[in-house]
Length: 93
Image (cartoon, rainbow, N blue to C red; front, top):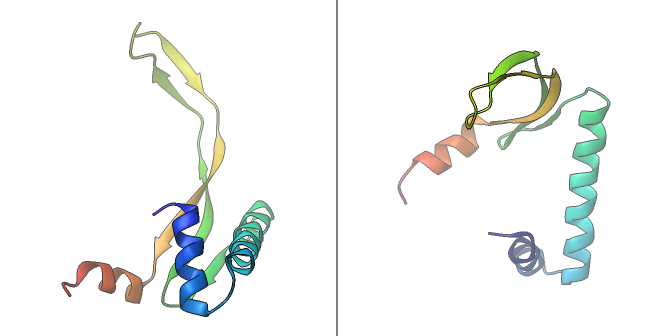
């Protein structure tokens, strides 16, 4: 499912226009990004938690040449599914 399909589904489920669904989705993603940039986490009970993980600097290899390269430390977004969400995905309907 891509963003347009998600907007269409939200629009139908919530009984709102696609423009309103797009605005709501954009607002949600902006709020998550802003919160993660501040170093906080976003927890949606039953769905999951968005957080930021720190990756340490490390050495890697160029797969074509085999030359060792340095990979910088960085922050990456992380999502951990909640118990209810994981159970719904794992169950057969």
